[in-house]
Image (cartoon, rainbow, N blue to C red; front, side, top):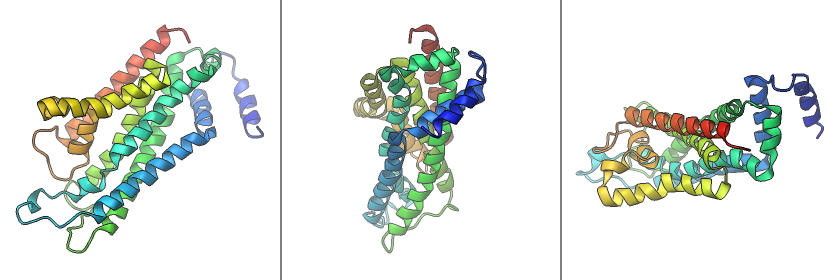
Length: 269
């Protein structure tokens, strides 16, 4: 309470309805950082990804002569992205749906009538945070997993072809999923339903579609893009190339946020 009151008094000097992006972004940052669940979730992202990377690399064996050319330890060490994306995406959903569940969204819109500005600020604040966390955990996982590799197993280096790009894009992927979570939350507004949609698109549908048609359609789903396009140092046949896959993810993010902003502006709080 001692830290919130001075901030509120400073913001209250701005006439109602005249808040600009900087003011709204600051409000959203205060909301986000004041929730312990936000930091616990992000800490869990870091811990789970590093742990999965270490365990995976500790159990990685040296490839046989016939598999050496396709051996991609970078892809193995980044396997924890699958868990990280779930946590990052769900937190993005909760940033929006949590306000609807508590009724606080009405107060937010009363103070800032421009609903698109509110969503833009939420996306900017959480997007920057999730991309930052994604990049940090990507490098932590890479170095921790590399150190856990057994003797005789080729160790990847950031100087190797495609390795630095794979680590960077994996971190950026987590940021994209966080933003998609924000958009899905704005579209659905109900926590359980929004989480179900997110899990369905990132986990269930890719598995079902992949089992039926292989990579023909499944290669366009975010999880498949992350696993087989972004987090690889060596190209994988039958899927999108790393930069094409990243461009598709950016397109998904823009579309979901745009639809969320449109619906947020047209529906009652």
